[in-house]
Amino acid sequence: MGGAIPVGRPPTGRRVSSLNDALLAAHQAKDSETLVRLYRAAGQDALSKNEVQGCFYLTHAYVFALEAGLPEASELHATLKSLGRES
Amino acid sequence: MTIQTSDLSAVMQPVATAKGLPNAHYVDPHAFDEERKSVLFANWSGVGFAKDVPNEGDAKPVNFLGVPLLILRDHDGAVRVYQNTCRHRGMILIDKPGNIRGTIRCPYHSWCYSLDGRLRSTPHVGGPGQNIHPEIKRNELGLIEIRSYVWLDVVYVNISGQAADFNVVHAELVDRWAEFDKPLFHSGADSSFTLDVNCNWKLAVENYCESYHLPWVHPGLNSYSRLEDHYNIQENGRYSGQGTLVYRQLKGDDGIVFPDFSNLTDTWDTGAEYITVFPNVLLGVHRDHTFAIVLEPKEQGKTQEHVEIYYASEHSLEEKFADIRAKNSTQWKEVFKEDIFVVEGMQKGRNGPFFDGGKFSPAMDGPTHVFHEWVAQSLSAGRQLAAE
Image (cartoon, rainbow over the protein chains, first blue to last red):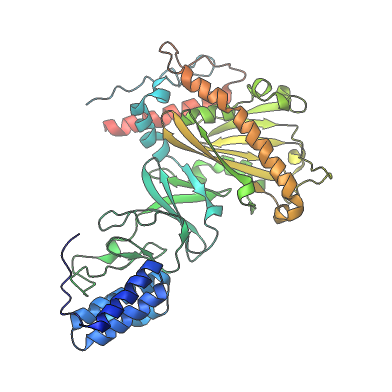
């Protein structure tokens, strides 16, 4: 429970809806590879417009990559670290 | 509130004049709590089996007397035990057995831990998308590792962290059975079973340690394994049990027998031993197989016995041994089940207010007395610590 996380203004319209649906489906299926791909794409997409929002999504991509032992974890870590958001 | 502690002085007398542990240590929840801390947490207790985490990343949660533990195999192939609790909000990290491909992710706020216990990620800990914070020092927030040791596939833990090393505490026993300290082979479900018993955990130990009951409770053994063929094993302050001089290998219908451990001395041609690794692990060794029983104390009058049978050779896992493996498991299960009525009967008997702990036979009950005395020493040490 709790309020929504203020990650900046989200993308709007059909694109968000389809991204949300895809993310929910991947969460439901515990499909780590897809979660990493979707969050990474969302993060990269948002990064130039809203760093907080971009890093929010990239963090999720990183966490799921770490959990699943996926190679993308290194690159995501490097990106977040370069932005001062990981150690 | 002051809890009345039991008088242990009679337990620590020589066997000829000693009494057994007082009733409270079987029926009183306060005494159970005392043993939890002073006996089971202060020493090296068995909590599981390494064969349950065979591969890198395999993890199995275990609840030992209310303490959530996580047994896992790390990247180096070593078995480790952690407190199964996130350092953030105390969430249980892993709730069912599985394989961790990368890191352990807490399901609550997704703090992630490596198999070596390091805290790897703290997402949004400094705000959205900000995963670091000056006050979150990851190198101080790794998983709490519990001291553990694997011997003959049993995973032991010392929860207090204060006991001497396992291989120091049990040096003599490890040396006694050095010939069996070799790879053990487990065939899976056909060599694994659990018994739920309505008795205090110690009664299972006491019954296991002595051979006195064998002719009465296991009459099937009389034909070849008579009482006089057994001997007491009683090493004060260390371990106890019993041995037999007439172990007879199980034979299949076609005369097949299990392959032996390599390079065993002649002693084991017809010898077998059954020893309790104090406090709660019952082990048996034979020329061709071993078994381990981890006693899981549930409450003062309930115990779960986790039984695993291991073979000396990988060949024993082959299909041609399937029938004799099943026969071996059935035979042991029958023996252990024959013991249930006595341990449950002794549990009921300890509600008799005039039972005084019991009178030992100096000739036959030595192993049980060694165990009682060891428990009493652990309890006394705990009381002394509490008083300091």
